[in-house]
Length: 335
Image (tube, rainbow, N blue to C red; front, top):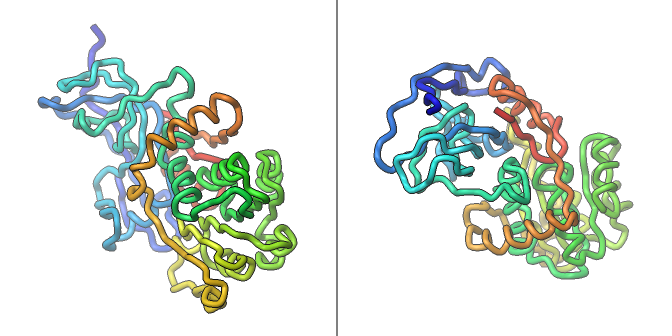
C-alpha cells in the first residue's frame, strides 16, 4: 500500500502587488496535510492554471470574487488524481477542482468534477475544455450574439481565450476573423490558426491597423484588452455591432486611472451593444460547449496551444510572465 503524504508545498500571497507583481509578492511554504474527514478527498495535483483574473484578486478590493488573503495559499483551477477518499469519488479518479497553487489539495468531494482523459490530456480541462474555453464560447455565441457571416475582431488573440474565440468564429461561419497580438511570432501563429488577418499592436495605431485588416468593418468585437483596442473597435464596428467585454488586461497593473474610449458616443448612432460578462453566469451552456468542443478537438478542427512551466516553484514567475504576454495559448504549470 502506497503511503500517503503528510505534508505538501503551497504558494501563498506574501504581499499585495503595487502595479506589476514581482516574485517577492509570493512565498513557497511546506505545510502539514490535515486528516480527511467524511465527504473529503485528497488530490495529488498534476497541473494548475494561472490566469489574468487572478491579478485582480491580489488587490484588497471588493469584486465578483473575494480577494486572496495575505499569508494564505492562492487558489485557481487544477487537475489531479484522487489518492485518498472519504467521499463518493473513488481513489484513482482524475478530477478538476479549484485548489491550485499547491501540490496536494484536500477538497470536498462535491467540489471536484471527474474528467475523461481518454480523448484529451488532463490539462485540456484547464484550457480548451475548461474555464477559458467556456469563456470563449459563451462570450462569442451568447454575449456577442454571433451570427453566421459576422466579421469578428479579437484582441489578445494569441492567449488562451482569444485563440479559441477566433477558431470558434471560423468554424461557425464568420465572414472574416481578425486578431491582435503582441509579437510577430504570435501574429504568424494566428494566421496559422486560420485567422484571416492579424497585426502586432506595437506596430502602430490599433485603429489604423484594424482598418486595414477589416476594410469593411466588423460586426463583433471580443475584448480581452480594453483601452486603445476598445476605442479602435468602436470606430470600426458596423451598425448594430456587438462587443463582448471579457477582460481589460491593458489596465490590470495600472497604478493610475486609464482613459476610457474617447469615441464612446459613436455607440449611439451605430446602435452598438457593449456587454460585460462573467463566465460563471453562463454555466448553463457548459454541457453544450463541452460536447461541441470535444468533437472539434478530437476531429483536429481546433488547435490547442499551451505554454508549460514545470514545478510549483515556477508558478509565480509563470503568472508574472503571463501578465507580460509571454504565453501563446494557455499557460499551464505542471506539478
